Length: 161
Length: 222
Image 1 (cartoon, one colour):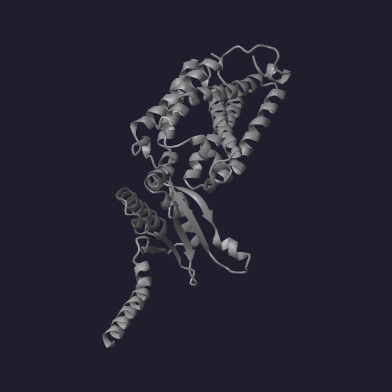
Image 2 (tube, one colour; image 1 turned 90 degrees about the horizontal axis):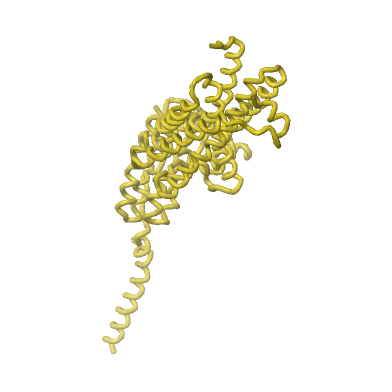
């Protein structure tokens, strides 16, 4: 009788323990990843950096596909902000990535963010494509992502300095 | 040999500059000097209106030769673009080009790259493509003088070469001369532009029938 009670307690305890561990199993699922954000500060003004970004995009083998001027958008709320998001890429690279996995569309084309902080210091910021795209565990995607890393690094540094 | 007076030279130079606006806009936009949409409104449209006004002015002021050059050059250039398309489009379908460039120009013109092409943007892109052809035709007609019309072939090739080293190919990610894409890119571009040159030479000095064109067109032709 005592042994049956003990056995029931052990089984119940095991079930509760496994149920409590579920979130950690979910957290370890293959879709998890951590992106690495790169921020390049600049001594130039916001206008100079945005102008440089737009003129350097082509030299780094990409095109500005879309521009989101958060500063102008948020000025309608009364907020004084200097911030513009550039969506950049090129169709050839995009084709190579999408041919491997259509899900890359969440991260491609890539984004470059130019903003001024509270002290009016401008920075160029982006998430390293290799850290975002490594989750797809595809060697071709990783290779293209590393190439994008180099392009963004070159672009951000040239625009900021 | 009749030499051109300074007024004629100045007029032709002004017309060449106006005609060069549209073909220059795409490379300028890829250098970051405004978007193609902006340049269409601030550069291409004013230049096109200037050309139209210039045509009317030279006609009214009796400079029939200049008026004729504008009409002939523009028409021949636009028609010659069909020959270019006869090479470019199959090249694109065979994978020799990174994309359909007139469609790309269209989405950039209407500022809808992120949304992709629509019927309107595709029409705009092809319209721009043929207008570029017309402008190159005008430039050749104005510069040609007494040279043989067959100089249009090296002229076409020079345009193709200019494209292969322009900021556009860098922005497309194919590199100068398409070195990061493949030899077939440069081959297609140069062949297409050579075809443009051949067609431009063939059409430029065709004798046009006097009817049923409207009087304004008939009077503009020799």
